[in-house]
Amino acid sequence: MDSKIELDNLKVNVWEKGVVKAKVTDSDGNPVNGKAVVKVNQITRIEGRVVNGVFCEEHDFSDLADDEYDLYMIYGGTAICNPSDICVKLYLNHDIPVEASLFDIQNASYRLTKWIEVNKRLPGKISINKTNVGIGNLLYALALSIHNSNENNVEDITITKYNPPKVSSENIGNEIVLSKEEYVKLADEVMIYMDANQESPAFVEIDDKKMGFMNLVYTFAKVVCNSSSSGLISNVYVRPWKTIVAK
Image (cartoon, rainbow, N blue to C red):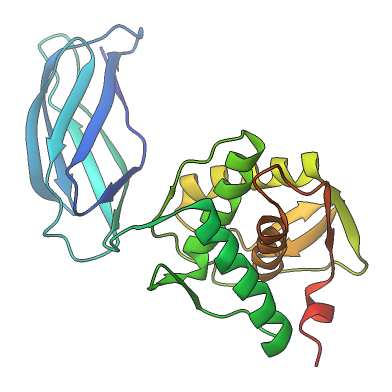
């Protein structure tokens, strides 16, 4: 009988131990038992057991220097269940996180929007609590700030690493108005995309038009810096990026 492994891509902060957790079943969906190993780029890192269909092992990945690796899990099988394997991605965050309050994010958003309006381009980094934060990382923090504000959540935000996109594609020709409900939904969609891909989107679609990464950062920053502890602004105007940076 065949077996099947279910294992998602793994994101690990190198200053913390990562947990590899997988579900292993036979072809009928029944949980199985047996030995399993986990390899990173074909080198065995973990040896453990599948118990009642669950493999769960904690491991220290801090010696790995790159940001991305192939992670293989191999289930050894039993007398009545065939071996199986799966390959997913292991993403390692080497950047020490920055803890920021909503006020910190609002302050950075204000400085960012003013910098863009003066310099007519998007900077590579912005300073938050005396630490330079990459703009790809900031986009997630902005989206999370919008989400949290909508939920009346005032908890601090941990800013971790997300890569910026390789390109930013946009074809907005005229100004678009997004309601609070629309930009909150957009922020949630951006977080889902970034969690799944470990990078910022090159664009998002609004009103059948492409809104580029750079404009997305600028627009979310406008929302955050113009909102307050009493709530989010009722709407935001999205201008074409080419008009924002026109000299």
